[in-house]
Image (tube, rainbow, N blue to C red):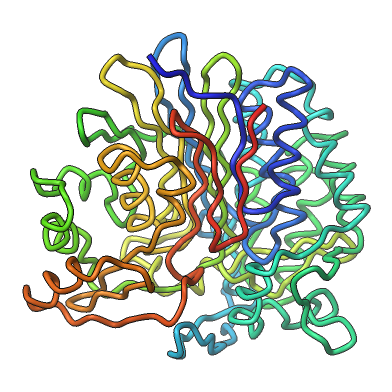
Length: 463
């Protein structure tokens, strides 16, 4: 048996360091993952924040049990005393094509990140809550450098992120943040200190709850006190599928990642598998951007915790004096389904997963950013590790293709014989000029090592 080393993979060096610090202090995988997620809410606010939502997958090494938690956003309006006003449409250019998103108070759904972090810690943590929050608090007070890949995302998402109060944060002095510049949110250190002292309830029944309601309603949103008081973290069913003799376990996401794995061709050799993989990945044209990030952690006992969180594009509605941007999930067109109603949990493409080897031991703990490309990025990575024998960095970093209807979007470096086979099968090939954050952002720890995605300047650190 090849044991998975203890380590952390994340999309920012400061995020990974926060998780590794907690592992060094004797924390569990859950402690370290929560610390890293909270650090994301400081260092990766282009992607996520305390005003967002997410999902967690936890693997218990002693029992083999896998648990999936849903702390994604919920539809507001259960108070029934306020109708949301109009949203503000913004054009975001991605891959050269404009895509319309909506922001503003009416786009804000009930956030779940504070509650989710609290529940993961309550179930599987062993360090004091305040110790787990401490790394994020330190980063919030000092500020943190923006990786070049994050600055590239900001370039695409600036119409939403740099709107309103976000202008001073992301375009200080009228100049958009570049790689290496300092990102700092005034007041966020104080918010983290309050979170450490009072716990996540401060956002649902405490002083920040009232502030959130007043702020959102002043921006024509419908969020109310009852929406926050009634919010709960949910435990969701765990799907499974076999891949190269390994069992993949994760939640049932909007893009049906586990079902897609189950539908992969029997012959997984290259280049023959390309058409079968592309056919399985066909996703009816969903290709929104989304601001998402992921952390993957394995501790010295072999437990794993993978957490994916998102802010959407950010609503541009900030909690006054706290440096917290609220989510824009109700303005994300691909997440709007016909069954949405006040109190209803929204759907998501996020899919933190674990892979169990034939002996029943952990093989991979992984997740990805990238909205509808999450599934593509994860499947490509798992094929690299489990089928092609690559190490984690090689599997995550190699070129990917993503399928939208009958078009294959291909990064440079994709195998020519595979692209020829796809073209021969009737797919249109769109070659991208370089590797791009459009194609997702995987972070993973496994028997093949630990790595973050170079498309997000991610890192993997081992204990």
